[in-house]
Length: 268
Image 1 (tube, rainbow, N blue to C red):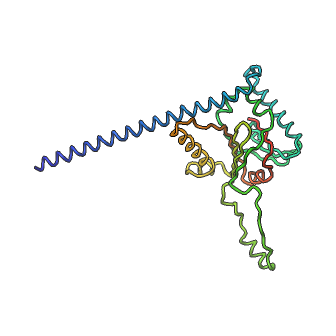
Image 2 (image 1 turned 90 degrees about the vertical axis):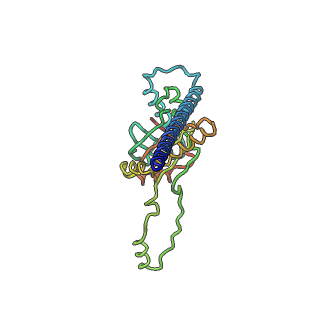
């Protein structure tokens, strides 16, 4: 009787173990299928965006690939000249020299060094005509969102005496000190420009590994949006993105000085 019970238990254990194996295999097959569909549809979305960009310059004569560098320089110069004719502050971003600056009538008002940058693969696949069509003229800011107030209002109550003033100075603290500083700008051609303020690239990378920081939240949001479209059998929406990281204080200053509908010139 004991032998039969032992055999039944072993048989049940083997069946459960076998069921777990089947479940794990099915889970990984489904996961691989979803990732495969996601990759296929994403590549299709990128191609569709590129084809749309090419239709805008289909009347232009084909350009020798070796001249792409000259076309980039021409686009950069012409775009900045057009921005210099405006009566408003504009922003220029040079990813070759890793510089971002505010300009008015061609005069540099503020300059900051770009500590880190990344661009979508879409920009790396553009030919000269598509590049010039996108960046040969200043891009207009269509929408701006930020993690901090662009034009904060602060109500300050005057201290009653010097003792109160000294006490207020002792406890005064920057309300933005522990808050991540980043802002997102939607430009012409559906380009998304993300600017984040960081004082240490290493700390920013560590935040990403821990599932924190602007870059991680942005990537998570994009993946979530893409999977929602896949579940609904819709092609993912592809948005060419540019991400730059500059010192935090510079990110605050540029955000607050830049008009909402300003022009932006970019060299990639």
